[in-house]
Length: 223
Image (cartoon, rainbow, N blue to C red; front, side, top):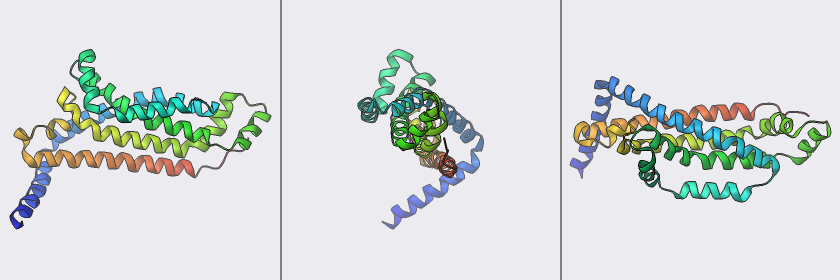
């Protein structure tokens, strides 16, 4: 047991040595990881956020939002990547599509429920002042819904950054290229890349949490 514990401690120490000895490699792979994760999250936001906000404004489409959420969570990322190989081949876009599917459910559902839960009296007052439906959504409902909307984006970002590690099996690059290549980088390299992924996920969660907190402190808009 002591020998096993010592081996684990040694691997952990070696991981930090690997980081110190290979900063350029880790920076390049981190940049690739961020590029893939950022593209997937950005596309998911463009697709899911407007739909979720508008459905929440209409108070319709709960079944659609719930169905998309359940399907997106049920589909394994490896299956999506394997399916995408037949359409997009090996590389960036295959992995991006798989990660987009993973990111859409929390963005869409949180946007829907955030707007749907806005006080109806405030919305009716805005309409009574002559605001159009788009103005009601943009100037009243969205500011009140921002904290929950950002919570969904935060969940999606963490999912995408963590899952992007498996992109290496389909030529997606990133830190996963080190994690899946134990023969070349050893246990120390695998652990070092895993620590970098964890740090990226934690940093993304921290930044979005701060943005969410700032959004929740905004004064409530008065129609």
